[in-house]
Length: 255
Ligand code: PEP
Image 1 (cartoon, rainbow, N blue to C red):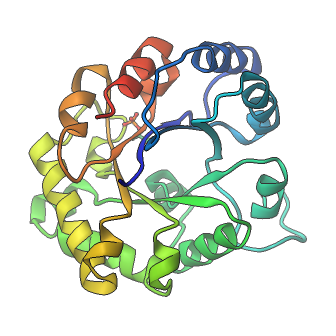
Image 2 (image 1 turned 45 degrees about the vertical axis):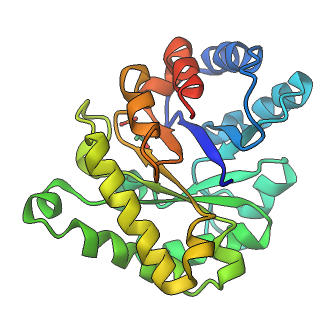
């Protein structure tokens, strides 16, 4: 059974006091998750260390702490950047790579993201690799080719064993932070397509083991319907993950 994941992306939000309160709220709950279900918290970089400390103290074995980004080089003169090695040394286990905000605001290319995926994997971090099309591409009806190219240019150098170590998050850009969610049919259609693209490259068995999360205005009110789709293995959640009650309900919506 592939992993089902409720992943929170806090982005650049919250003060340390607010972050600690939210961590305490989340980590104090027992959701009675199944062995194949997992909660991942992608907190801002300065809060990774306190988050790991709180997570360790909580004994929550099905919660993992994630970074929101890492740099593509091992170490050196890259002022302001965070390395994969630093994350691994903190016992951070996941890192979001290729979020559309990184692609759009910081001009991260598919080629750079391929390097980030490699360095993350080399330190045993699980990349949560984001892909997804802007509105113009969706309106032109060319979203499948667009997203397939993102996978091809950033992931296809990986072999069949390694690709299974990744989590993929399909996040249509027009649905991120807009309140405009893809319908569960649109999400399923794209997730099914992505799995077929992976199957074509790596075989159906391998594709069947890769978790594909949906991201884009997931909230308590729509999580269950989205997660009930056969190829939707959970969600990457921005805004709603900052509200404990909302995110708690999203975790409980894992199937
Ligand atoms: C995200 O940040 O990845 C995201 C999907 O944001 P939101 O849930 O706010 O749309």
